[in-house]
Length: 293
Image (cartoon, rainbow, N blue to C red):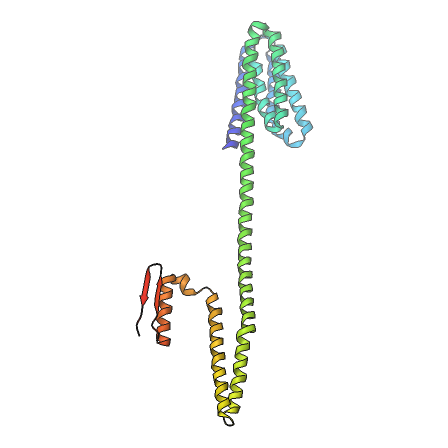
């Protein structure tokens, strides 16, 4: 939108310059006509070629502005009794504000204003020239301020788009880091469970194996000692079962995430009752469950 407004401003000032040129050519039908026509024709040609100068080199831009200013001054000298030529600075104001830093653009706009003031006072006198000086000064600086605002809006939009792109990249990187962190957390949890299994359950199971082997050997020799080993084997089995349950309950139960806490607890209670023939009462958060054998 801002760039479109800038383009419209360019076109409007160009049309303003063309209108002023037509007024000058219509106004003068004497021997000055061809001189003014040649000067204004050169101005129009350079005006249309301005993008070429801007793209090539900064020095060409200064030369372009100097030649255009000289042409306007020549027209002012040839036709001092009119003020139409002053509008020819309007496109130049737009160009300098668009292609130079803001401070430089306002400085050059001030130079155009001074030149216009000098020639208006010389050609029309103080009584007529002073009001026109105020009018053209306001026009020049309103155009300059308008272009400055448009360019600031363009810069702000480009900065916002750049920040949005950076945020999108950062969001993608954060998602990648989150995935990596989750994978590392899973690996760490697996390693912890493996260590716990190795440190506790596997040793208990190994002790159970040795105890079972000892009970088998003593079964024919000493039944008393064999019974003692079997009792020891039962105790080890209970210990291993308790350790396995502890490790399993450290994990997040799938039923909780799929069904919710209360339905998962109910299912677990029913399972315990069926497997062990227990009477289980479950209370919590206003929920009371009691199952009878």
